[in-house]
Amino acid sequence: MRKLVFICVLIFSLPFQLHAGVPYAEILADPDNIELNQKYAVEQLEAGNAKGALAAIERVLAAQPTDLTARLFRARILMALGSDLQADSELQALSKLPLPDAEARMVANMRDQISTRRRAWQHMLTLGLGLVDSDNVNNYPASGMVTLQSQESSYSTFDIAGNEFKEKLDDQATTYNVSHLSIYDPQLQTIDQIFANFAVAGSEEGDTGYLAYQSLNASLGVRMRLGETIVTPRVSFSDIDNDFELLGDLNITSYGLDAYRKISDALQASGGLSYVERGYEGAKSTRDGNTMGISAGINYLLSPRTNISFSANYQRVDADTDADQDKSVIAGQIGLSTMPANGHIVSLAAIYSDAQHDNKYSGSIGALSSGKQRGDQVTSYRLNYTVLGQSLATQLRNFRLQAGYNFSDTRSNLTDFTNDNRSFTLTLSYMFSY
Image (tube, rainbow, N blue to C red; front, side):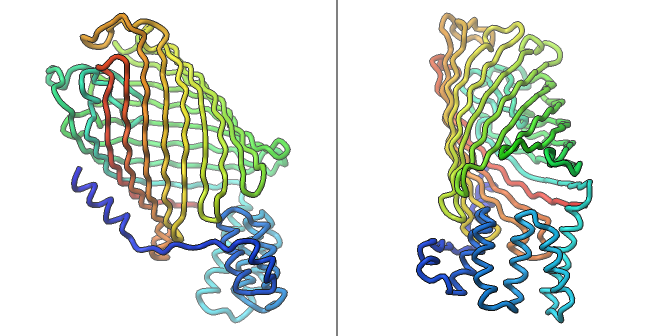
């Protein structure tokens, strides 16, 4: 773990400078200030307020109509607004001018982007390679409630050699993922896109075998517009094979309906419904069952480079035969995301969940005391730092590097289920669009 922590520290120490936002009051006080409007336009576009950015850059062009940089940026804003015809018209006019090589390449790239967006089909291939390091893969002390990389949990009170756990197990593994996303634009007013994704992921076996798994995932969804609300129904299927046979292989089928609505330039609201069916193979089939969920959240833009989010969800878990798995879960999350420098993104999240089981615990997992209704409270903290390759060099624009840290603390009225876990991840991804 020390090596991975050291690598993460090196990444977090990459140089960058903080950017102060331009208050709108300054624009009102000095609307003809070209430099101020240029800076405000850049900040507003990064914040997702393309209309505000367009108004600011129009003021710049009113004073300096031949400013090539401002004209290029105006075309970029028009693309963000979905006004591709206007943007392409501006870019076509610019392409006829004797531009410097850098600006000429930018114009050509932007026209290529517009051409790509006009195509009915778009595809993206993502390749990822990473490392994961966990200090408690067996969730010691006694339950052996192993948290898999596939985000599902299974149980074992014994290690690979058949010995009962005596301490935390620290393990490291190499991870990989390959995914292909296809997006189809049917050119309909109410349907923005139909998308399909296929992914293969997994990790190589470490010292314990707990981190080793392979998974196949396929998903299909439709993004629709209902007035001002974007609605996305989706379905997905996952097949997860765990190398450690005591964990059991798993099939997951999930159905979801997500909704998103922009309330104002700074505030967005979202919600969702989900239904998940899980099926284990072999002896673990007693844990087959389903989970129903409902969620709601808001996202608020604190500044052009920083936003904060709040969300809450409720889940109902029912197992077909194992009554120890029946429970209700209430969870809440607060998150913060900021861009301290172009291409550098820092996100933090704190999550709290309370799980109350329906029945008195039967002791079905290990030699644990029974007779109580189990209740678990889980507090988790996550920190991710992402570096986009284009912020380092133009040649790296298809690359992305992410370092992550996660801490999870579980407190249960059945002390055997009380545990904590710390993990580090480091992932390098390559994305290719065609």
